[in-house]
Amino acid sequence: MVERNEVTYSIGYELLGITFQLTTDDHEMKLHLEEVLEKHVAFNKSKAIDIEIFIPFIEPNKRRYLTRTAPDSASILANIQFSYGARPRCHWSSTAPPLIPFNTEAIDGKFFAYHAAAITAPTMGTVLLLGNKGAGKSTNALALCKERGWSLLSDETCVVRSRDLVVQALLRQPHGYTVDAQNIARKSVLRFSDNLWLKTEKEGAPILAVELILIPGIVKPHSEEVTDKKIATQILTRHQLQFGGTPESAQGCSRALADAVKLVQIYHGGYLSFSSVQEHIVCTVSRMFK
Image (cartoon, rainbow, N blue to C red; front, top):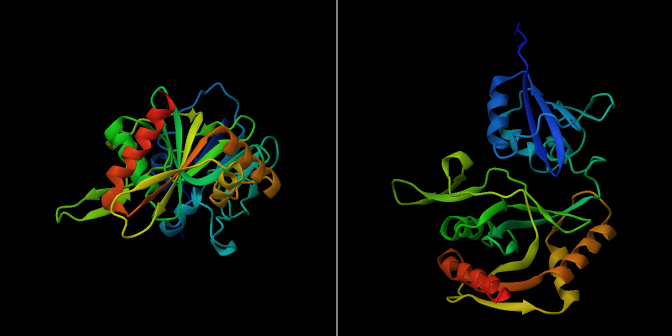
């Protein structure tokens, strides 16, 4: 018979303006949660707790669904217990990630999300990097942080507050390329504490959206501004994620964002052209402030 661990560990974190209290009775899970939420853990202890979550031991192959949408009902982390406000605890029953529970009353319809990285250029504003998988969103965002001193808001999912279109930090551990002893670039998790160049912001006002489009064979990247607001709305909607709210209100957010920011498409040939892609982004932002 396995004895139950009577020790309870508690972690507080703040995300999207909401305060969470996590508890777990498993030390391995405590360490994992602290690592995943590294940049969100600290919050004002005097603030009231909005959401309480109990997380027991979760198998390593399912832990990614703590912060990423589960692909099907079989992957739901149903052994997690969740309570909002004064309501009684219930088992988690959604494919939404429990550490970012966007389908709860506190979040639903108040935020919208895009498959994009978000970075902030000092004194200027936030840039969204939209694109399909493999388009270079994370790699270029992290390079601009490391080489240009920009700050990271998110490397995969960009969350926008609907009432004022301000981009919110979603600081999950980013994935970046590191070169191993055999000089092979491998994608791995980058810990904030190990990479001090990874400066961060809590939120940022968007000024520019860039759609990265991979076309193998292009040697020199080139950019085109999208001036038609209807087309800009369609591009933003294409990269929008299901994040609560209705489809109509989500499209309304994309229309408002298209009116508020400049949108540029950058066509590139892949990893070897990324330094030029970054130059295009930096030059576009610089021209906006001349």
